[in-house]
Amino acid sequence: PGLRVDPVGADGPSADVPLVPGGVIRHKHGYMRRYFFPMEPVPVILTDTNLVKPALSWNLEYLEKNLGDGDFSVFYSKDHKFKYYDQAKYNDKVVPDFTPPMSQATMKFSEFLVKFRQWKHGQPRMYLQHPLNDSVGKAIKDDFLAFNWKWLESVQKEHNWGNLSSNLIYIGMEGNVTPVHYDEQENFFAQVEGFKRCILFPPETFECLYPYPVFHPHDRQSQVDFDKPDFESFPKARHLRGFECVLEPGDVLYIPKYWWHHVESLLGAGHTTSINFWYKSGPLTQVEYPLKPQRKVAMIRNLEKVVTEALGNPFEVGPLFEALALGRYI
Ligand SMILES: CCC[C@@H](CC(=O)O)C(=O)C(=O)O
Ligand SMILES: [Zn+2]
Figure 1 (cartoon, protein in one colour):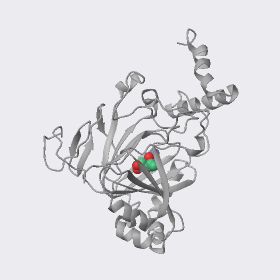
Figure 2 (figure 1 turned 90 degrees about the vertical axis):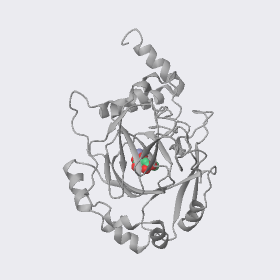
Figure 3 (figure 1 turned 180 degrees about the horizontal axis):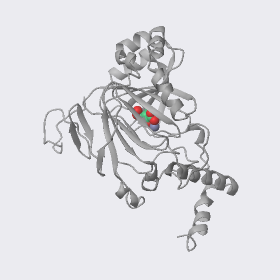
Figure 4 (figure 1 turned 180 degrees about the vertical axis):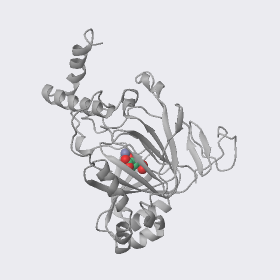
């Protein structure tokens, strides 16, 4: 449903090219949305880790049979974008006109599957995102225990990472997008079913992606809309250059802490299933100079928090930093 001839498709009109305002780019497995910035290939995709090898049999039927009858968190979005927001930061005094861009429901996996399978184009899209916890059935537990933990633990030790904080399973519709954002944890992102395009930008891209203020519900998310960029408000977005790859089942992508990433499920390629492995960072090593960009982003976040708390009002933060910098540092 929803796949129609699109005259602006990369290779000209052909059956089943999805109708996307900005046009699409054909990929061997489906279609990718076209964006305004240049990209080069991600240099390294891990294809032989066997990290989630047992999960390569996790098709929807297997999951329905074995995931158990726990509750699952499912997000709904009126468009293709599932932009994360922190419910806890949703404070109408700080952000008076904030409207959550997606809604969340909790349901049994079987209920999710029924809705997921009968989805019609034009209805709100769905994205199941839930921690793998011990409510899952025995078969899933056994598969999970058979993940390549030995390799993962060797990496964790070698890089002095903290503990594994969570494994989330993601089941998305083709064409779903998680807009560009960064996380504060190291992430091994494993693709299980379907094809996911990941676009990465290094941490120093902070100034071209204009993240929301730390107290905003969209903290860590970029204000730049890749489908409709506002170059007036965010002029440096013109300088964006990304790294892209399309993950296939069995591929693992290392998304380092503070690296920006945009993730989309290829159009015309069926649903996607992914599992991520988020690690807390290890103990702070002593500061080394020159400061790494990650360290500067962490510093900016701390400054925003301290100054916002001290001023007691997020709207005074801008004027204070202007008074501090204009004519003195800029
Ligand atoms: C909720 C976000 C999940 C994932 C993106 C995706 O697969 O859609 C991601 O951003 C991450 O694993 O950090
Ligand atoms: Zn992320």
